[in-house]
Structures are given as structure tokens and as C-alpha cells.
Image 1 (tube, helix red, strand yellow):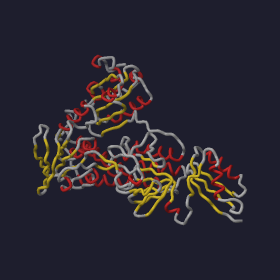
Image 2: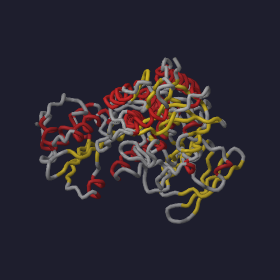
Image 3: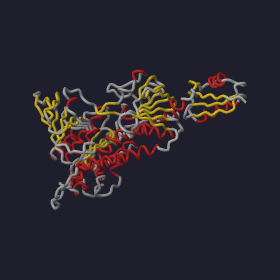
Image 4: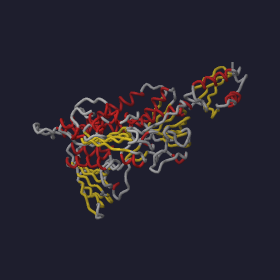
Length: 550
């Protein structure tokens, strides 16, 4: 018996039942010997007797239905296995790996193309993991030299800076292997490729001159430090978090350009590890995205620890003189000054999306004004077969949001689902000391949205746990809708304050009222009890409450 095979790309299927229906329809053709239709892959592989039917007849049968259409015939030449995939993922971070895991569960042939950072992306290599490791190391050093109790007198600390960095590198390598590479090591349908991807058209990318095609694409290329255009900056051998975290020789000092969360975390960690730190910030305060009371609490602690903060200073020129860097700055009063940095300059002036090398002009992919890929809540771009996720997009830039976005992008692309990212109660933490944590709206955001609101702000000096620990730095702030009593936002400034924010995020998500928070039980002498007290103080003076307030 003569036998031929045709493989087709089909549109219009919304579930596995659709695939079964197409198989039954094709089986009515006497010449069709076997038909395998995959809803997740959006494909039909059909073997037939060419003396009894034809490719055209099979295609016309599918196109004759109300809902399904043959988009194209998938080539079955000798090179197809090497360059034809159901899904191509551009990037190698958390969004990419989450997408690859979901794709494997759906049986999709997947190519992951990664350039720049090692597989694992920003978080494990140069972001979350190394920064939090160094922050904790710095905390250990700080507590060995500082005590909240008069009866305890620390005797100091011996810091082996090089060993700390070596241990950090070992940790990064271990987690990169165990949490990323090992996870996908036995995937049957995943191919991983190092290189830079560039779109030739909306179905084809080029990597080192070779073409790779896919039914659908996920761009998860991440972001990198945004290097400002300042005279002489390119001639001073500046550092970013990528290069700083690998520096085994302790720098004499650091001048950090930028007082966002990255710059602030670096400043506290390295200052506590014995490096003299200065921060130059062109706006009026640190962590400018938050309300002034948060900035003030953080600045107070940082200055107390000896960190120099220069708000409203703008660097206009850098120059190298011997081993020193001269930073020419415009001062708040409009005059100019020169700052001498004997150590290193670190650039922490925000991030930019990695889109410049992707050839997006070739396919007309829409970007935002900031250069990020514009996506909706389903991770769809303006092109129907191309999705995007993670830091490369106009969504919140966190490792956990990136992983979520990678997953739902693949589900929406291949499973016909309508999953959406809802960040209205998203929790976040800045790992300074005290930590800054938030979820939902702050008072400024509520006002801008026209929401009627009230604020309760409880200083930690009124929280029994903080009093007992002799550490009353910070506050707990709750924002409620004054008409419904529902919690709409929260901000926490406290040692380990990040441990409180998930409860508050859940309260916002499930529309819990402030009364519900106030009426709940909290273990005595926990920081969490501060949430109860803050809820109570919407209607009562906290100074009039006993330790058994309810």
C-alpha cells in the first residue's frame, strides 16, 4: 500500500474535544489511514493512501468546517527537526524556564535561545540570590558590632571579604544548577541553545546565521542596567551589579549612582561589610517611588550607619585622574562641585529592556515609550503568535511575576485559556534594614484614582514585639476604602517587615475589611500583632490601648 504523511498547522481549536472532532471527520475519508490531531500543538499529522485521496482533499475537509482552518503545511524535510518548533522562547531567566516547564507538560517541542547572562537569568546570577546573600552577610557583620541592649557589648568582627564573595559565587553556581538546569535536564521536547536571537519575520529567528521557525514565540529576554549618557562615563571603568558582585578585592569605597531599590540594597550590604559608601541621587530623596515618610525612615537609618546621601545632585561629567575618579556634579542650588572617588563607581540608575538586538523592527512589534514590549494582562503582544513575559515587558519587574507570566503565556498560546495577570494586590519587598514592603495602593495612588480612603499609621514604638526587642525603627501603614472599610493598600517599614506583607496582600486580594483584621487573633509579641493594632487605630488612639487590646 502506498502511504504518505502530511502535517498541518491548524487554527480555531479551543479544546481537546475539537481535536477529537477533526480526527473523526478525517476518518470518514476512505484514503485516510490515521489522523493524530493535537490541540496544545495546534497540529494535525495525517497518513493517507495517495491513490484514494490527496493532500488537497484533506486540507479542504478541514477548511470546510465552520471553525477550523489549515494555516499552513509544516515541512517534513530532513532539517525540520533541527529548526522547526512549536514554541521558541527567547531568554533564559525565570519567565523562560517557567514557560519551558509548562510547554513540556503540554508536549510542545520547544527551543530556548539565551544570550548574555547564563541560563537562570538575572535573579540567580546577578540579582536576587547574590544580593540577598550579601545583604545577610552584611547583617551578620553589623550585629557583631552593634547591640540594641546596654548589657550586651559586641566585641567586633573579622570580615574576610574575598571569602564572602567566593561563597556567594558557590551559592549562585549551586542554585543555578539545581533550580534551573537540573529541573529541565530530562525534558524530552526541550532544546537549549546559547546565542543571540534576531527576528527575520514573525515566524523565523536567526541565531548565528541559522534559521529557526516556530508556530509561536515567547520573548523573555529580561532587562539590564540602564547606563545614562554622561560625558566621560564610558572611560572610567564603572561597575554595575553584574560586575560588582564578582569583585573579590574589597573596594576602598563606592559611589553609587542612583537611590532606587537596587542602589539602596547594594549600599547597605557593602557599607556593613566595611566599604565606605556614598549615594548620588538626582531626585530629592531615596526610593522616590514611595511616599516621603518611607524615604525619611530609610535615609535616617542609612545616615546613622555612615552612608553619605547626596539628593538633588546630578552628575554631568566623569574623568579619571590616576587611580581616582572625579565626578563633576550640579548641586541643588545650581552651583557645581567635584566629588573625588578613590574606589569604584557603581551605576544603579534603573534598568532597560533587552530589545535592541531582537530585530523587532522587522516584525513591527509594539514597544512602550520606555522601550519595553507592550503586553496586555494575558501576555499578548500586538502580533497574534508572539507573547512576551518578565522584565522585558511593561509589567512589574519581579522574579515571581516573571515566572507567573511565562506560565500563563504558554497556557494562553497553546491551551486556549484566558488567564490574566492581576497585580492589584501584588506584594513586594526592598531588602534594606529596615525592610520596606508594600501591597496594593498607597495614599497618593488612592487619591490619584479618586478612591475615598483613610490611613492608619502605627509607629513600631507602639508594637510590643518591637518594644521588647529594643528595635522600634519603622511603622505599619494601612489604607482602607472609607466607604466600604475594605483594605486597599499597606506599607510596612520594619526589621523583617517583608514577612508581614503576604498576609496584607491576601487581605487586599480577598477584599477583607479592616474590622476583620482588627477582630482576628494574633500571637502576642509578634510583629504581626502590629497589623491588628494598626487596624484598631482607625477608630481608637493607640496610646489608650493596653497590651491586650481588642
